[in-house]
Amino acid sequence: MRVSIALFLLLLSCGAMAQPIRLISYQELPDPKPADKASWSAVKAGHYFSFTTADVRHEKHAAPNPALVRAGWNANAWKGEKVHTQALLWSRSAMFQVTLSWSGLKSDKSHTIPASQVSARFVRYVMTDGLSPEGDNCNERPIGKYDSSLVADPIDLVQVRDVPQQTAQPVWLSVVVPPSAVAGHYVGTLTATSPSMDKPLVLSYSVDVQNRLLPAPKDWAFHLDLWQNPYSVARVHGVKVWSKAHMDLMRPYMKMLAGAGQKSITATIINDPWRSQTEDVYGSMVSWTKKKDGSWVYDYTIFDQWVSYMMDLGIDKFINCYSMIPWNLKFSYYDEATQKDTFLIAQTGTPEYDAHWRPMLTDFARHLKEKGWFEKTTIAMDERPMKAMQQALALIKGVDTNFRVSLAGNYHPELESDLIDYSIATNQTVDAATMQRRRQAGFNTTYYTCCVERYPNTFTFSPPAEATFISWYAAHKGYDGYLRWAYNCWVRDPLHDSRFRTWAAGDTYIVYPGPRTSIRFERLIEGIQDYEKIRILRDEFAANGQAAKAQQLEKALSQFDVSVLTSTPAADVLKPAKALLNSL
Image (tube, rainbow, N blue to C red; front, side, top):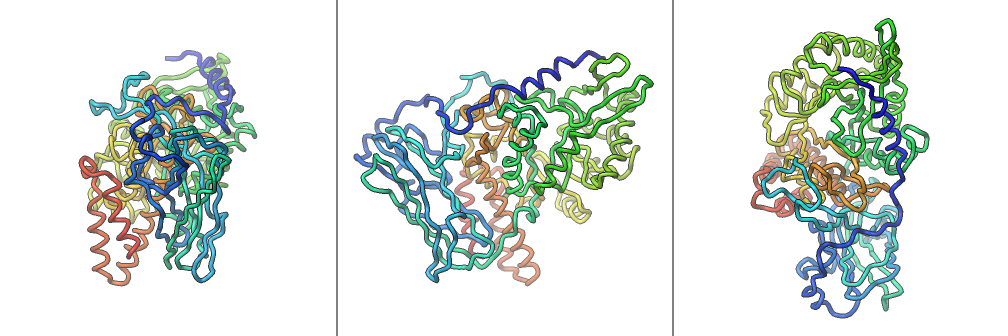
């Protein structure tokens, strides 16, 4: 079946040039919940600034629970580790032009962590929804179907903002311990000032730096694969896709991703591999042209530009190319004979499918080898039926037996030996022997979450500790890392409203335009750091014959089963485990 897709391509181009979203200063949506008068009536006149916990998303309309307010904060950290917490500003009256500032940290032996390694930013509120009462979070979600509320998640870029009366204003404090830091007890301060205040509000905190070193993110073994969407960046910033402006604007987003230890490049070798399920449709980074004589020509200019760009940022383990089995089995190309954009719909295993893909795979292999990328490249699919995968695998290996293949989906023992990069659904099980054999062969085995999993997850309404739990679960089960389908598949207005038409709010992205990080993203990085510490300690205990310490660690890890979250909050599972980890 063939029809023109010129309109599709035109819309894709126009979408990328849409009016940009206001990215610097913006107003949050009105809080659908009224002020909690009872909580504010208990607050005495004045302005308050205290530490709280990174495990809680404070409600904008309510004064904080006194049980969550803390005078100070102490963190344990390895050299090279980033640690964080949350503070809170609140008052019955408005606070104008609140400014955040901070000192460096000093030890009792006069060693320092410079202020440049510290940051404090206001946490903003975004609209969210909630879990489906029926348990199905992958369903149609018209506005108002589920409870909607403002939730604290985006971490803003500004250090000065007004705080309205009867508003809880969270602040996110981060300290990156330099790899060269001297072990010891360090003390620093965080300050909030405002013309509305009688005096500066100053908080003191401490960080105990241990004599252990966490590798740099580029050297982390944890395999993080958050899929990138360059088309979303173009639309939100209102620039032409693949222009110099687009590439320049993407750089801080992708550097932030590299700083989390990202390993894989998300590349698309066909148009719309996911049936337009996102706000910004993925285009093809490879141009397909069918010549008048029936032969094919492929233009890899955009593909090469994107891959080189990401590699320059340090993301270079895999180039995952989507997809030979798109969700609608539609394959677009330009037909020179008719001088039209058109497409073919073909099932795997058919002569039409083979005739379409065999020439491309042959030429693609040639091109990748010329670029020196063949060993890093996978032909990637996700959530496809086993029979379709087997048919595609036969074709791929028939073209070049050394082609590598990636799949995110259910676990199929019949397929795993052909998949160098296999991400398993959370509810699936891979036996330990298979996991170990794959690791010894240099194969990668991770797990993923999506809209299906109620927990652990990274929806905007998910408890923040669940993002950290994710990597502890990977360590417990023996996975090499974690995959999530969307780093930045932004909804229409991602700074204001994280809800989406078909999935739970926040399912489509974990960072915000700006670029702005988020509580979810920072807590995910926290868990990855923990995974690396666990890996280092496991190796150390095994090498030194420290069986007792190894048993302590494994006992703590045994608590990290998904089923535990049905009755125990992730924060309660993490607290004793992290205390043990930092004591070993």
